[in-house]
Image 1 (tube, rainbow, N blue to C red):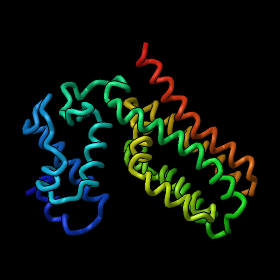
Image 2 (image 1 turned 120 degrees about the vertical axis):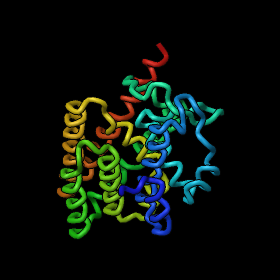
Image 3 (image 1 turned 180 degrees about the horizontal axis):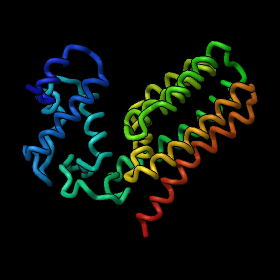
Image 4 (image 1 turned 60 degrees about the vertical axis):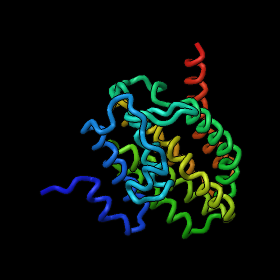
Amino acid sequence: MTLDAETLLKNAASSGRRRSLTELVIQALSDKIDRGEYAPGAKLPTEPELCTEFGVSRTVIREAVASLKLGRRLIARHGVGVFVSDDAAQSVETAFIDPATFKNSMHVLELRIGVECECAAYAAQRRSEQQLKALKQVYASMEVASVDDDAECARADFEFHLAIATCSGNPHFSSLLKSLGQEIIIDLRLKHAKADAKERKTFIKRIQREHGEILDAIEKQDEAAARRAMRRHLNESLERYHNLSNARAE
């Protein structure tokens, strides 16, 4: 007999592993949508209600809901609440990005460009051999991440940027990235969640090449090259958001 996701969630609730709990909540909510307990167009229970139902923190609920929004299963209506999508199969990228999430992702990217370019330069200047080895290991783990799992790819991407912050020798870079972790992962999932498999593979290959250029500059201790490589990498994402914003306005 196979346990449903809600039973698994109750069994795992005391583990304290936020990532596992988030994945279980995602599955539990998806099951409820599939069973029609949350019908198309229905409003999702509030965060406190979901926290009580599943026995998890608000952070877990927020991550699960954010994931389902990115997967087109839920839609946020600013100032009203979160609703089950009427059309879970919609493929237009901007259709499932609510305005608040869209604008916040742009703001986070602007902040990251201002911070991470200098962070990469300091990483090139200060990194130790041990830190460089750890950065290479994170880079290698990105290459084996499942292309079909946008959540796994997004988390591996975030870990790479966090490893660069560690190489900088300035703990405040790491602290800042960690404090923005949820927002950064939402942005990364927006980038990694391509509807077309071929497009997703091409995108991930390009992103990995960009990461490789940053890694190469840090290894060579070329501060200017590291700064440029990071700016190119992050600017591409920001330009993409600007293009989507312009398309919305037309």
